[in-house]
Image (cartoon, rainbow, N blue to C red; front, side, top):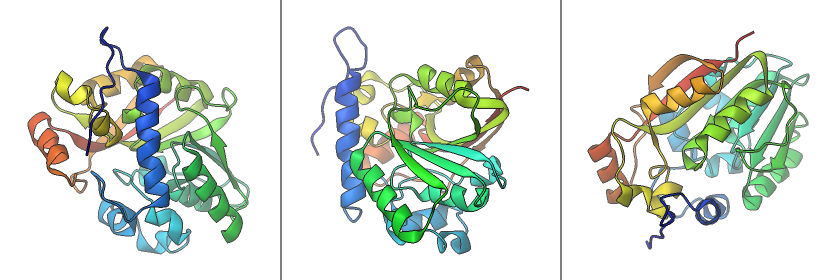
Length: 265
């Protein structure tokens, strides 16, 4: 697999190049879920991470085929009937469909993704399976199309690490959450600082490694945005597949965590 530099000479991430690389990979995830990736995928992964099989039976099978999450965080979200939920980086919709079950018919779930093939697949599956309380939207997690203070719960699974502007993502989450709202997510973080050779590898960025923040900085960024971190849990069930990804994980403590934060009343 070839690599591409995403760091400018000035040391800043080339956001456009990074987005293209990420879109290329997750376009394949949507259209070729049987392909070779740095990460596991599909229903076996979801069950290994702890998703209840009975819940997975109730959502579209093809959404699960393209599931590439890094943890099972939905118990932390504690989604209730009638709530409004936003899924940042919703992909083919596994977590969004589950959230739509939990909100019930009086709730609303809005998925956001920048990759057209992922959105189109999720939209088609929602139509075909009668999920009328869920919509999927085009956009970037750094600048969402949702109104300020309009959301009860923001969820995300293995996506924020892909952004080169995580401070903007955290600020956007804080903006759209209502007072008392919740952020629940799974993401990839590190125990030690990543070297430039990893940060400059666009393939490792797209594989959820190159852009991973140190865990304390990640929580600190959420706090700086005005949210209160309530819980952080390690996900030892999650593991990378390729030698390059496993090497980075061993060397720098790259790992998956679940996190819950709230917006003060």
